[in-house]
Length: 160
Image (cartoon, rainbow, N blue to C red; front, side):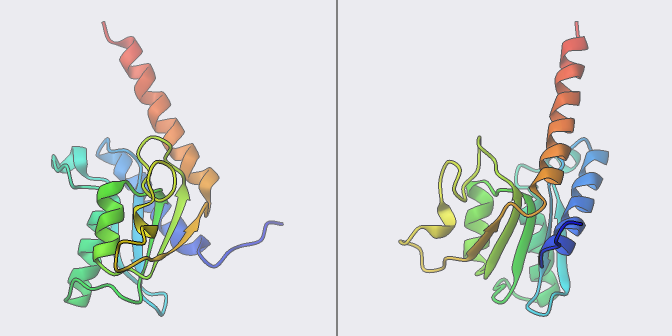
């Protein structure tokens, strides 16, 4: 029997959002924002392809939804839970939103800005540095991404 961590349930919700992203042929990344009491106040999934929006990353979509729920841009006391390590844009957005904690699943060796390539959220020059919890349900997040990209590689190989 495996031990369940405190962030497993919110991460499962983020994984559900990632699966919905597949319907729009978007990279399967999902995110949720939970308040200090553990209530989900925002959800998001990648929508770059389905909405034609370069800022349609799961984290940005979830942060926008949480800010709308709260009626303000400051998300102090909140946790952003996302299936993939944020890129520089998303890491910057969560710092600027004053999110207290970032929880992510899989590392992103190509674009990750929370330790892989850069470490935006821990930069001492910034006035806000959220706590980071990495690797939550990483295998599930990685499997979704691996399956997506393997299918896209096969599709490209079939093209004349």
